[in-house]
Length: 224
Ligand SMILES: C=C(O[C@@H]1C=C(C(=O)O)C=C[C@H]1O)C(=O)O
Image (cartoon, rainbow, N blue to C red; front, side, top):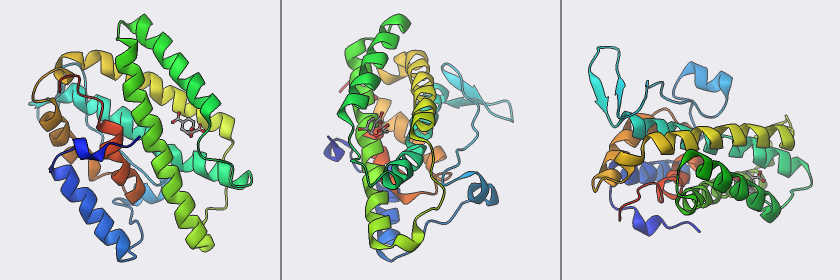
């Protein structure tokens, strides 16, 4: 379940609202860079990241680097929702929710989390949010294509292959969660996440993904 009420008024909220307004005005998603048009609907800010801090080209540490790595993995996993939706749509508008697949994903997450030394309940909460966010994006795309079949992409991805990519991003997210455990437990975690998001979201060009980010990030901080 999406729990947007837990996300306060943040720069991210402001941006998401801006995107919503632009969406209502009928503005199509515009790639932020020429590359965005060629590699897909989403590109990611290339911000070097590592445990604790990320180095920047000027040699000055970027605070919240490990949170950036978490958000990169969240955004990468979310970006695959587009391909999932296209595969399902082409398969007779297959139901977006697949409970068996969710159970497989969550069982694997719990197992891998335990192996990494992450509390499996914490990991499951984070990944239930990723699943909700993915379904939110898929539903938005279904709604868009229903309203205007002309915008439906012609290529049909293979769902099994796409799920393999999701699994790779899930692995990346688990590893990033492990590295960022101290930052995710800080009382400033939510504010730090929002600051890190500010650097990332300018590179996301799909409005449905931007709207799903509050859901995808709602369970990341471990202190309330
Ligand atoms: C991504 C999919 O859509 C939904 C989201 C899932 C996920 O994010 O892991 C899993 C199952 C579906 O309910 C999928 O079917 O693979």
